[in-house]
Length: 334
Image 1 (cartoon, helix red, strand yellow):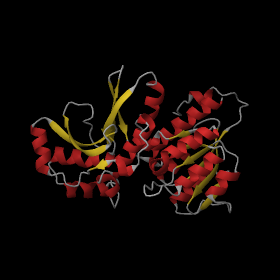
Image 2 (cartoon, helix red, strand yellow):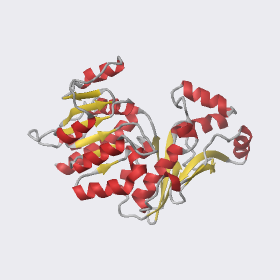
Image 3 (tube, helix red, strand yellow):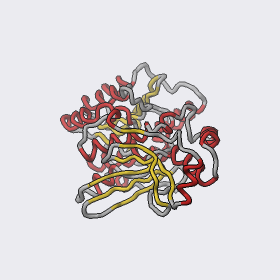
Image 4 (spheres, helix red, strand yellow):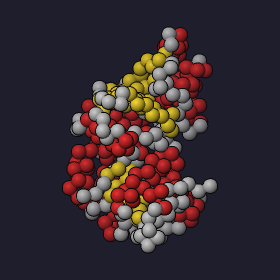
């Protein structure tokens, strides 16, 4: 059964389509192409990957070509040419995250905003490298920069705080923000397995990368802490400001001792403290989620503590968060 999208359904039949350019066509970009096909009034006018650009693409065709390892290109344009010259409403920027300098995403963001394009992204790199610059540029140009998908995948947190909790003051945010680490720690604790064994298992299953450093060293979680700190606490911080300890040194003895005392060990990102470190979490605490799930607890002045959980990774899950931002922009336009 096709999903129902009220924002798209309520548009007038003669409304102009909401035009998207997808920049980056890896797993997440392909996920976006899949989910937007079922949404009325959304039109993908261009897709760019590292090998070229497809203009007015047939989505099923370009997805098939990617599966077969073929080029999707049908033009001589570059990604920057698309951003500057092709008529569209939203740049969906989903190139790989680079926390060193944010590139190539940072250049894509800047060009899109300068050309008065809305930007929706799952790419943490540019936001970690230049959050203040980019948000100010978006304000100055009168366009939106949306990034729900950068922090929790399908787990809603940014729009939850910005919209639903708009009447509260957020006092703190902390959470389990990396599914790979959570899977490893869950398996180690529940099955009495050693770190190296579970990491190898996670790599075989595609849960962990061949080089897992970005996840297990806490780098990914630290990037999410930076984004949340800048978005909701006006901290103007970068990755270098976060004190980071990963999970590589967690031992089986430590996990079993914690369980005997009624605790689980979780890698916790604390936005207020700007820390990422393994912490003891009570077994019955809502942050004690299993497997690849993410969870975040938001402490507010009037609503108390609110905890949300959901899948923090996966192409379709991340694409669903991107789609929520796109539909919000569509609703604002119409």
